[in-house]
Length: 239
Image (cartoon, rainbow, N blue to C red; front, side, top):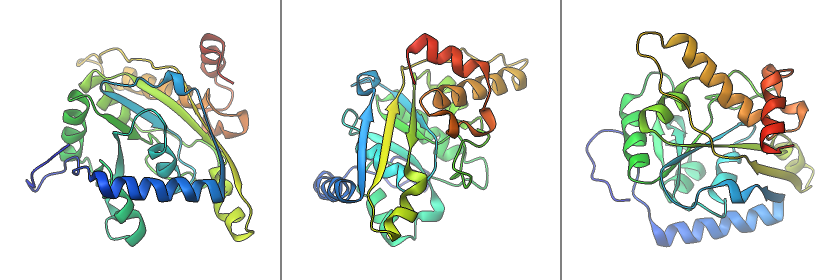
């Protein structure tokens, strides 16, 4: 997707030749360093605007999402603190992505994401807003919900298990087993403008429970014991 420089957040232009090179390098490194398996690929819509929501255990999670075999147009919302990181910024600048300032309400990034979704693109979001340092889910934030409702886009939850051990295994020269499990798409009801706080929290909890339903119980973290997780598993045949 092409974009002119306007001084505002936008989907950075796709660079096909460099993308093929970087994706090939990532795929090779994933083969060397990981035992990566994708499950539930049939749940990912091949076309149309959609949001992939995921847990976040490691810096390699974004690379794993970029390797998903269905949507090559996945544009992660990437924290702008990595703009000056030589490896991460080079990789991100090879694919569609949106830089976001997580220290404030970044309305420019939000608008860019909505535009991309309405044009049929795929956005990748980690609702926790930061990497979990405890190896399990931490409290989710409402950004993914607001984005989905405003754009009218379906959400596909994905649970990534195993990447929390990547750094430790790398030092030991061991391959890390990783499973990325995609759940069934779901949609959220519009929010009542007269009473947003309660429904917004409920929708955020729903998104996080949908992610948890794709993960083994030890990853459920602050959402452990939620009956809604078990309901989703029964409804969708997840773990």
